[in-house]
Length: 463
Ligand code: GLC
Image 1 (spheres, rainbow, N blue to C red):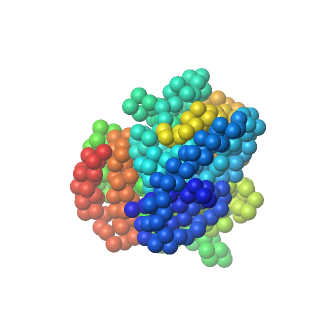
Image 2: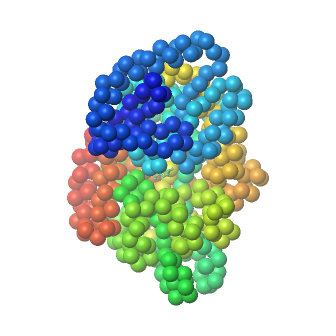
Image 3: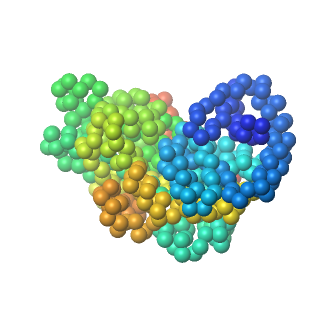
Protein backbone atom coordinates (compact mmCIF):
# COMPACT_ATOMS: atom_id res chain seq x y z
CA UNK A 1 0.00 0.00 0.00
CA UNK A 2 1.54 3.32 -0.94
CA UNK A 3 1.57 6.01 1.68
CA UNK A 4 2.63 9.60 2.02
CA UNK A 5 3.88 11.39 5.13
CA UNK A 6 4.41 15.05 5.77
CA UNK A 7 7.31 15.73 8.11
CA UNK A 8 6.69 19.12 9.71
CA UNK A 9 10.24 19.45 11.05
CA UNK A 10 11.87 19.12 7.63
CA UNK A 11 8.96 20.35 5.55
CA UNK A 12 9.20 17.31 3.31
CA UNK A 13 6.62 14.95 1.94
CA UNK A 14 7.72 11.31 2.21
CA UNK A 15 6.07 9.07 -0.27
CA UNK A 16 6.13 5.30 -0.59
CA UNK A 17 4.78 4.35 -3.95
CA UNK A 18 6.14 0.85 -4.27
CA UNK A 19 4.77 -0.69 -1.10
CA UNK A 20 8.12 -2.44 -0.80
CA UNK A 21 11.37 -1.13 0.52
CA UNK A 22 11.51 2.44 -0.36
CA UNK A 23 9.94 5.79 -0.07
CA UNK A 24 11.05 9.16 -1.27
CA UNK A 25 10.33 12.80 -1.15
CA UNK A 26 10.47 15.50 -3.71
CA UNK A 27 10.76 19.20 -3.13
CA UNK A 28 11.49 21.74 -5.78
CA UNK A 29 13.51 20.01 -8.47
CA UNK A 30 15.43 17.71 -6.13
CA UNK A 31 15.36 14.02 -6.99
CA UNK A 32 14.49 10.93 -5.00
CA UNK A 33 15.74 9.96 -1.57
CA UNK A 34 15.38 6.36 -0.54
CA UNK A 35 14.11 5.60 2.95
CA UNK A 36 14.43 2.10 4.49
CA UNK A 37 11.13 0.41 5.25
CA UNK A 38 11.70 0.12 9.02
CA UNK A 39 11.56 3.91 9.31
CA UNK A 40 8.33 4.11 7.36
CA UNK A 41 6.19 2.60 10.15
CA UNK A 42 7.59 5.05 12.66
CA UNK A 43 6.89 7.88 10.25
CA UNK A 44 3.39 6.64 9.67
CA UNK A 45 2.61 6.91 13.37
CA UNK A 46 3.99 10.45 13.29
CA UNK A 47 1.54 11.44 10.58
CA UNK A 48 -1.16 12.81 12.87
CA UNK A 49 1.31 14.75 15.00
CA UNK A 50 3.01 16.20 11.95
CA UNK A 51 -0.19 17.36 10.36
CA UNK A 52 -1.30 18.97 13.62
CA UNK A 53 2.04 20.75 13.96
CA UNK A 54 1.77 21.91 10.41
CA UNK A 55 -1.71 23.30 10.96
CA UNK A 56 -0.50 25.28 13.99
CA UNK A 57 2.54 26.67 12.20
CA UNK A 58 0.41 27.52 9.17
CA UNK A 59 -2.03 29.41 11.39
CA UNK A 60 0.77 31.32 13.11
CA UNK A 61 2.41 32.09 9.83
CA UNK A 62 -0.86 33.26 8.34
CA UNK A 63 -1.48 35.69 11.16
CA UNK A 64 1.95 37.26 11.05
CA UNK A 65 2.32 37.92 7.35
CA UNK A 66 0.37 39.56 4.56
CA UNK A 67 1.57 37.45 1.69
CA UNK A 68 0.53 33.81 1.53
CA UNK A 69 2.47 30.75 0.46
CA UNK A 70 0.78 27.85 -1.25
CA UNK A 71 2.11 24.53 -2.41
CA UNK A 72 1.56 23.31 -5.97
CA UNK A 73 2.07 19.94 -7.64
CA UNK A 74 3.45 20.32 -11.12
CA UNK A 75 4.37 17.90 -13.91
CA UNK A 76 8.11 17.08 -13.86
CA UNK A 77 8.48 18.04 -17.51
CA UNK A 78 6.95 21.45 -16.78
CA UNK A 79 8.95 22.41 -13.72
CA UNK A 80 10.58 25.40 -15.38
CA UNK A 81 7.28 26.59 -16.84
CA UNK A 82 5.60 26.33 -13.45
CA UNK A 83 8.44 28.27 -11.87
CA UNK A 84 7.92 31.02 -14.47
CA UNK A 85 4.24 31.09 -13.54
CA UNK A 86 5.03 31.24 -9.82
CA UNK A 87 7.39 34.18 -10.41
CA UNK A 88 4.81 36.07 -12.47
CA UNK A 89 2.10 35.39 -9.88
CA UNK A 90 4.35 36.60 -7.08
CA UNK A 91 5.00 39.79 -8.96
CA UNK A 92 1.28 40.32 -9.47
CA UNK A 93 -0.03 39.32 -6.04
CA UNK A 94 2.92 39.15 -3.64
CA UNK A 95 1.94 35.55 -2.88
CA UNK A 96 4.29 32.66 -3.25
CA UNK A 97 3.70 29.29 -4.90
CA UNK A 98 6.11 26.53 -3.90
CA UNK A 99 6.43 24.15 -6.85
CA UNK A 100 6.70 20.41 -6.14
CA UNK A 101 7.76 18.10 -8.92
CA UNK A 102 5.48 15.12 -9.50
CA UNK A 103 6.96 11.66 -10.20
CA UNK A 104 8.43 11.18 -13.67
CA UNK A 105 5.61 8.79 -14.58
CA UNK A 106 2.32 10.61 -14.00
CA UNK A 107 0.58 7.32 -13.06
CA UNK A 108 2.75 7.28 -9.95
CA UNK A 109 1.12 10.47 -8.70
CA UNK A 110 -2.24 8.71 -8.28
CA UNK A 111 -1.36 6.90 -5.03
CA UNK A 112 0.27 10.07 -3.70
CA UNK A 113 -2.87 12.09 -4.33
CA UNK A 114 -5.04 9.30 -2.92
CA UNK A 115 -3.00 9.22 0.26
CA UNK A 116 -2.89 13.00 0.71
CA UNK A 117 -6.58 13.43 0.06
CA UNK A 118 -7.64 10.46 2.18
CA UNK A 119 -5.68 12.03 5.06
CA UNK A 120 -7.43 15.38 4.34
CA UNK A 121 -3.94 16.84 4.21
CA UNK A 122 -3.49 20.59 3.82
CA UNK A 123 0.11 20.15 2.67
CA UNK A 124 -0.67 20.67 -0.98
CA UNK A 125 -3.07 23.33 -2.20
CA UNK A 126 -3.06 22.99 -5.98
CA UNK A 127 -3.05 19.71 -7.90
CA UNK A 128 -2.09 19.06 -11.51
CA UNK A 129 -4.69 16.70 -12.96
CA UNK A 130 -4.92 14.45 -15.97
CA UNK A 131 -8.39 14.48 -17.58
CA UNK A 132 -8.88 10.81 -16.65
CA UNK A 133 -8.36 11.57 -12.96
CA UNK A 134 -11.21 14.05 -12.66
CA UNK A 135 -13.78 11.36 -11.87
CA UNK A 136 -11.37 9.68 -9.46
CA UNK A 137 -10.75 12.78 -7.34
CA UNK A 138 -13.98 14.71 -7.82
CA UNK A 139 -15.12 14.46 -4.22
CA UNK A 140 -11.81 15.87 -2.94
CA UNK A 141 -11.57 18.90 -5.20
CA UNK A 142 -12.96 22.31 -4.41
CA UNK A 143 -15.91 23.61 -6.44
CA UNK A 144 -14.48 26.54 -8.41
CA UNK A 145 -17.79 27.57 -9.99
CA UNK A 146 -18.14 30.75 -8.00
CA UNK A 147 -14.44 31.24 -7.22
CA UNK A 148 -13.32 31.71 -10.84
CA UNK A 149 -15.13 34.58 -12.61
CA UNK A 150 -17.60 33.35 -15.25
CA UNK A 151 -15.89 35.52 -17.91
CA UNK A 152 -12.61 33.65 -17.28
CA UNK A 153 -14.32 30.26 -17.46
CA UNK A 154 -15.92 31.26 -20.78
CA UNK A 155 -12.52 31.76 -22.42
CA UNK A 156 -11.87 28.00 -22.51
CA UNK A 157 -13.20 25.48 -25.05
CA UNK A 158 -16.64 24.64 -23.71
CA UNK A 159 -16.24 20.85 -24.11
CA UNK A 160 -12.93 20.85 -22.22
CA UNK A 161 -14.32 23.00 -19.41
CA UNK A 162 -17.49 20.88 -19.28
CA UNK A 163 -15.42 17.71 -18.80
CA UNK A 164 -14.46 19.20 -15.41
CA UNK A 165 -18.07 19.84 -14.37
CA UNK A 166 -19.03 16.81 -12.34
CA UNK A 167 -22.04 16.42 -10.05
CA UNK A 168 -22.81 20.12 -10.61
CA UNK A 169 -19.35 21.29 -9.46
CA UNK A 170 -16.53 22.82 -11.49
CA UNK A 171 -13.68 20.81 -10.01
CA UNK A 172 -10.73 21.97 -12.15
CA UNK A 173 -9.70 24.45 -14.85
CA UNK A 174 -8.10 23.37 -18.17
CA UNK A 175 -4.37 24.17 -18.49
CA UNK A 176 -3.72 22.87 -22.02
CA UNK A 177 -4.95 20.45 -24.65
CA UNK A 178 -3.22 17.20 -25.49
CA UNK A 179 -3.92 14.91 -28.40
CA UNK A 180 -1.86 12.07 -29.88
CA UNK A 181 -0.01 13.20 -33.05
CA UNK A 182 2.41 11.65 -35.53
CA UNK A 183 5.80 13.31 -35.86
CA UNK A 184 8.02 12.27 -38.76
CA UNK A 185 11.32 13.01 -40.43
CA UNK A 186 10.25 15.17 -43.35
CA UNK A 187 13.85 15.21 -44.65
CA UNK A 188 13.91 11.40 -44.90
CA UNK A 189 10.46 11.17 -46.49
CA UNK A 190 11.62 13.71 -49.08
CA UNK A 191 14.92 11.90 -49.63
CA UNK A 192 13.08 8.67 -50.48
CA UNK A 193 10.20 10.33 -52.36
CA UNK A 194 7.54 9.19 -49.88
CA UNK A 195 4.23 10.89 -49.10
CA UNK A 196 3.07 11.29 -45.50
CA UNK A 197 1.15 8.03 -44.82
CA UNK A 198 -2.64 8.06 -44.37
CA UNK A 199 -3.09 4.52 -43.02
CA UNK A 200 -1.16 2.51 -40.41
CA UNK A 201 -0.23 0.00 -43.15
CA UNK A 202 1.27 2.78 -45.27
CA UNK A 203 3.14 4.06 -42.23
CA UNK A 204 4.57 0.60 -41.51
CA UNK A 205 5.64 0.10 -45.13
CA UNK A 206 7.30 3.54 -45.38
CA UNK A 207 8.93 3.09 -41.98
CA UNK A 208 10.39 -0.28 -42.99
CA UNK A 209 11.68 0.89 -46.34
CA UNK A 210 13.39 4.02 -45.00
CA UNK A 211 14.73 2.19 -41.94
CA UNK A 212 16.31 -0.53 -44.10
CA UNK A 213 17.77 1.91 -46.62
CA UNK A 214 19.17 4.19 -43.93
CA UNK A 215 20.74 1.23 -42.14
CA UNK A 216 22.29 0.05 -45.41
CA UNK A 217 23.67 3.59 -45.87
CA UNK A 218 25.41 3.41 -42.47
CA UNK A 219 22.81 4.57 -39.90
CA UNK A 220 22.91 1.28 -37.99
CA UNK A 221 20.67 2.51 -35.15
CA UNK A 222 17.80 3.71 -37.32
CA UNK A 223 14.28 2.45 -36.53
CA UNK A 224 11.05 2.98 -38.42
CA UNK A 225 8.67 3.82 -35.59
CA UNK A 226 9.16 4.92 -31.95
CA UNK A 227 6.04 4.88 -29.75
CA UNK A 228 4.96 4.02 -26.19
CA UNK A 229 4.28 0.36 -25.35
CA UNK A 230 5.43 0.20 -21.73
CA UNK A 231 2.80 -1.21 -19.35
CA UNK A 232 1.28 2.13 -18.17
CA UNK A 233 -1.43 4.68 -18.98
CA UNK A 234 0.42 5.82 -22.10
CA UNK A 235 -0.13 2.37 -23.63
CA UNK A 236 -3.86 2.73 -23.06
CA UNK A 237 -3.60 5.88 -25.20
CA UNK A 238 -1.47 4.35 -27.96
CA UNK A 239 -3.62 1.21 -28.11
CA UNK A 240 -6.96 3.02 -28.03
CA UNK A 241 -5.75 5.12 -30.99
CA UNK A 242 -4.98 2.00 -33.02
CA UNK A 243 -8.24 0.31 -32.07
CA UNK A 244 -10.53 3.34 -32.51
CA UNK A 245 -8.99 4.33 -35.86
CA UNK A 246 -9.69 0.79 -37.07
CA UNK A 247 -13.38 1.00 -36.18
CA UNK A 248 -12.89 -1.00 -32.95
CA UNK A 249 -14.32 1.52 -30.44
CA UNK A 250 -12.93 2.87 -27.19
CA UNK A 251 -12.90 -0.15 -24.79
CA UNK A 252 -16.17 0.79 -23.05
CA UNK A 253 -18.81 2.91 -24.80
CA UNK A 254 -20.23 6.12 -23.35
CA UNK A 255 -23.31 4.26 -22.21
CA UNK A 256 -21.26 1.61 -20.43
CA UNK A 257 -21.10 -1.34 -22.86
CA UNK A 258 -17.81 -3.23 -22.91
CA UNK A 259 -16.92 -3.14 -26.62
CA UNK A 260 -13.27 -4.19 -26.73
CA UNK A 261 -13.81 -7.83 -27.78
CA UNK A 262 -14.34 -7.24 -31.51
CA UNK A 263 -12.53 -8.25 -34.73
CA UNK A 264 -11.42 -4.70 -35.66
CA UNK A 265 -9.77 -4.23 -32.26
CA UNK A 266 -8.05 -7.63 -32.59
CA UNK A 267 -6.81 -6.81 -36.10
CA UNK A 268 -5.38 -3.44 -34.98
CA UNK A 269 -3.51 -4.97 -32.02
CA UNK A 270 -2.30 -7.92 -34.10
CA UNK A 271 -0.81 -5.42 -36.53
CA UNK A 272 0.99 -3.53 -33.77
CA UNK A 273 2.35 -6.81 -32.41
CA UNK A 274 3.98 -7.39 -35.80
CA UNK A 275 5.82 -4.06 -35.54
CA UNK A 276 7.84 -5.06 -32.48
CA UNK A 277 11.31 -6.12 -33.58
CA UNK A 278 10.50 -5.17 -37.17
CA UNK A 279 9.96 -1.38 -37.39
CA UNK A 280 10.06 -0.73 -33.61
CA UNK A 281 12.82 -1.91 -31.28
CA UNK A 282 11.98 -4.53 -28.62
CA UNK A 283 12.77 -1.70 -26.18
CA UNK A 284 9.50 0.02 -27.18
CA UNK A 285 7.83 -2.40 -24.74
CA UNK A 286 9.49 -0.32 -22.05
CA UNK A 287 9.23 3.13 -23.61
CA UNK A 288 7.15 5.94 -22.19
CA UNK A 289 6.86 9.35 -23.84
CA UNK A 290 10.30 10.59 -22.82
CA UNK A 291 12.20 7.45 -23.79
CA UNK A 292 10.61 7.23 -27.21
CA UNK A 293 11.16 10.96 -27.73
CA UNK A 294 14.86 10.51 -26.99
CA UNK A 295 15.13 7.97 -29.82
CA UNK A 296 13.39 10.30 -32.27
CA UNK A 297 15.29 13.42 -31.25
CA UNK A 298 18.62 11.66 -31.42
CA UNK A 299 17.78 11.08 -35.09
CA UNK A 300 17.11 7.35 -34.85
CA UNK A 301 13.45 7.03 -35.80
CA UNK A 302 11.53 7.87 -38.98
CA UNK A 303 8.12 8.16 -37.26
CA UNK A 304 7.26 9.03 -33.67
CA UNK A 305 3.87 9.09 -31.90
CA UNK A 306 3.67 11.59 -29.05
CA UNK A 307 1.86 14.68 -27.71
CA UNK A 308 2.16 18.23 -29.14
CA UNK A 309 5.01 19.21 -26.76
CA UNK A 310 7.44 17.28 -28.98
CA UNK A 311 7.09 20.05 -31.55
CA UNK A 312 8.77 22.29 -28.97
CA UNK A 313 11.43 19.88 -27.69
CA UNK A 314 12.42 18.61 -31.15
CA UNK A 315 13.28 22.17 -32.13
CA UNK A 316 15.32 22.95 -29.04
CA UNK A 317 19.08 22.95 -28.69
CA UNK A 318 20.29 19.39 -28.13
CA UNK A 319 17.85 17.84 -30.59
CA UNK A 320 19.44 16.30 -33.70
CA UNK A 321 16.32 16.83 -35.77
CA UNK A 322 15.84 20.61 -35.66
CA UNK A 323 14.00 21.71 -38.84
CA UNK A 324 13.70 18.12 -40.04
CA UNK A 325 10.37 17.37 -38.36
CA UNK A 326 6.89 17.19 -39.84
CA UNK A 327 3.70 16.56 -37.88
CA UNK A 328 0.30 15.19 -38.89
CA UNK A 329 -2.79 13.58 -37.42
CA UNK A 330 -2.39 9.88 -36.63
CA UNK A 331 -3.06 7.48 -39.51
CA UNK A 332 -6.28 5.47 -39.78
CA UNK A 333 -6.71 1.69 -39.81
CA UNK A 334 -8.61 1.80 -43.03
CA UNK A 335 -9.77 4.44 -45.49
CA UNK A 336 -12.97 6.11 -44.23
CA UNK A 337 -12.16 5.78 -40.52
CA UNK A 338 -11.37 8.81 -38.33
CA UNK A 339 -7.85 9.59 -37.18
CA UNK A 340 -8.31 9.00 -33.47
CA UNK A 341 -5.64 10.72 -31.40
CA UNK A 342 -6.12 10.04 -27.70
CA UNK A 343 -7.55 13.13 -25.99
CA UNK A 344 -5.62 14.20 -22.94
CA UNK A 345 -6.27 17.73 -21.71
CA UNK A 346 -4.58 18.59 -18.42
CA UNK A 347 -6.09 20.61 -15.58
CA UNK A 348 -5.33 22.31 -12.28
CA UNK A 349 -7.67 21.98 -9.31
CA UNK A 350 -7.68 22.96 -5.62
CA UNK A 351 -7.42 20.45 -2.79
CA UNK A 352 -10.75 20.69 -0.93
CA UNK A 353 -8.85 20.58 2.39
CA UNK A 354 -6.54 23.48 1.51
CA UNK A 355 -6.24 26.05 4.31
CA UNK A 356 -6.06 28.81 1.67
CA UNK A 357 -8.79 28.01 -0.85
CA UNK A 358 -9.18 31.56 -2.20
CA UNK A 359 -5.45 32.06 -2.75
CA UNK A 360 -5.17 28.60 -4.33
CA UNK A 361 -8.15 29.28 -6.62
CA UNK A 362 -6.57 32.58 -7.66
CA UNK A 363 -3.37 30.71 -8.56
CA UNK A 364 -5.37 28.16 -10.58
CA UNK A 365 -7.10 30.94 -12.50
CA UNK A 366 -3.72 32.58 -13.12
CA UNK A 367 -1.85 29.46 -14.29
CA UNK A 368 -4.73 28.46 -16.59
CA UNK A 369 -5.41 32.00 -17.83
CA UNK A 370 -4.55 33.48 -21.27
CA UNK A 371 -1.16 35.00 -20.40
CA UNK A 372 0.29 31.85 -18.87
CA UNK A 373 -1.22 29.61 -21.56
CA UNK A 374 0.38 31.83 -24.17
CA UNK A 375 3.73 31.65 -22.36
CA UNK A 376 3.48 27.82 -22.29
CA UNK A 377 2.55 27.74 -25.99
CA UNK A 378 5.50 29.95 -26.96
CA UNK A 379 8.04 28.24 -24.73
CA UNK A 380 6.93 24.61 -24.98
CA UNK A 381 4.39 24.31 -27.83
CA UNK A 382 1.67 23.27 -25.38
CA UNK A 383 -1.69 23.67 -27.11
CA UNK A 384 -3.91 26.20 -25.32
CA UNK A 385 -7.41 25.42 -24.11
CA UNK A 386 -8.27 29.10 -24.65
CA UNK A 387 -10.05 29.68 -27.95
CA UNK A 388 -8.67 33.20 -28.57
CA UNK A 389 -5.06 31.96 -28.62
CA UNK A 390 -5.87 29.95 -31.78
CA UNK A 391 -5.79 33.18 -33.75
CA UNK A 392 -2.86 34.78 -31.93
CA UNK A 393 -0.15 35.41 -34.58
CA UNK A 394 2.77 34.77 -32.22
CA UNK A 395 1.30 31.46 -31.06
CA UNK A 396 0.53 30.41 -34.64
CA UNK A 397 4.07 31.18 -35.69
CA UNK A 398 5.44 28.98 -32.91
CA UNK A 399 2.93 26.15 -33.51
CA UNK A 400 2.02 26.28 -37.21
CA UNK A 401 -0.20 23.16 -37.00
CA UNK A 402 -2.28 24.57 -34.14
CA UNK A 403 -5.37 25.44 -36.21
CA UNK A 404 -5.47 21.93 -37.75
CA UNK A 405 -5.28 20.46 -34.29
CA UNK A 406 -8.79 21.66 -33.59
CA UNK A 407 -9.89 18.94 -36.04
CA UNK A 408 -7.68 16.42 -34.20
CA UNK A 409 -9.41 17.40 -30.93
CA UNK A 410 -12.81 16.95 -32.56
CA UNK A 411 -11.92 13.50 -34.02
CA UNK A 412 -10.10 12.30 -30.92
CA UNK A 413 -10.58 9.03 -29.05
CA UNK A 414 -11.83 9.69 -25.54
CA UNK A 415 -10.85 7.18 -22.86
CA UNK A 416 -13.81 5.75 -20.93
CA UNK A 417 -13.18 7.69 -17.72
CA UNK A 418 -16.54 9.48 -17.93
CA UNK A 419 -18.55 6.28 -17.47
CA UNK A 420 -16.12 4.41 -15.22
CA UNK A 421 -15.32 7.35 -12.88
CA UNK A 422 -13.50 6.12 -9.79
CA UNK A 423 -12.88 2.69 -11.33
CA UNK A 424 -11.18 4.14 -14.45
CA UNK A 425 -7.68 3.41 -13.19
CA UNK A 426 -8.45 -0.28 -12.65
CA UNK A 427 -10.16 -0.52 -16.05
CA UNK A 428 -7.21 1.12 -17.78
CA UNK A 429 -4.69 -1.06 -15.90
CA UNK A 430 -6.53 -4.21 -16.98
CA UNK A 431 -6.50 -2.95 -20.57
CA UNK A 432 -2.85 -1.88 -20.81
CA UNK A 433 -1.55 -4.94 -18.98
CA UNK A 434 -3.46 -7.22 -21.31
CA UNK A 435 -2.27 -5.29 -24.40
CA UNK A 436 1.31 -5.38 -23.11
CA UNK A 437 1.07 -9.17 -22.73
CA UNK A 438 -0.16 -9.43 -26.31
CA UNK A 439 2.55 -7.16 -27.72
CA UNK A 440 5.36 -8.82 -25.84
CA UNK A 441 4.45 -12.11 -27.46
CA UNK A 442 3.09 -14.20 -24.61
CA UNK A 443 -0.64 -13.74 -25.11
CA UNK A 444 -2.80 -14.56 -28.10
CA UNK A 445 -4.73 -11.45 -29.15
CA UNK A 446 -8.28 -12.72 -29.73
CA UNK A 447 -8.61 -14.88 -26.64
CA UNK A 448 -6.94 -12.17 -24.51
CA UNK A 449 -9.58 -9.66 -25.62
CA UNK A 450 -12.35 -12.10 -24.68
CA UNK A 451 -11.02 -12.62 -21.17
CA UNK A 452 -10.25 -8.89 -20.82
CA UNK A 453 -13.89 -8.08 -21.71
CA UNK A 454 -15.04 -10.45 -18.95
CA UNK A 455 -12.83 -8.70 -16.38
CA UNK A 456 -13.97 -5.26 -17.53
CA UNK A 457 -17.64 -6.23 -17.07
CA UNK A 458 -16.96 -6.58 -13.35
CA UNK A 459 -14.50 -3.71 -12.95
CA UNK A 460 -16.61 -1.08 -14.69
CA UNK A 461 -19.39 -1.54 -12.19
CA UNK A 462 -17.20 -1.06 -9.11
CA UNK A 463 -17.30 2.70 -9.59
C1 GLC B 1 -0.26 12.85 -21.46
C2 GLC B 1 -1.74 13.12 -21.59
C3 GLC B 1 -2.50 12.37 -20.54
C4 GLC B 1 -2.16 10.90 -20.60
C5 GLC B 1 -0.65 10.69 -20.46
C6 GLC B 1 -0.30 9.22 -20.67
O1 GLC B 1 0.26 13.45 -20.32
O2 GLC B 1 -2.02 14.50 -21.49
O3 GLC B 1 -3.89 12.55 -20.69
O4 GLC B 1 -2.85 10.17 -19.61
O5 GLC B 1 0.02 11.46 -21.40
O6 GLC B 1 1.06 8.99 -20.49
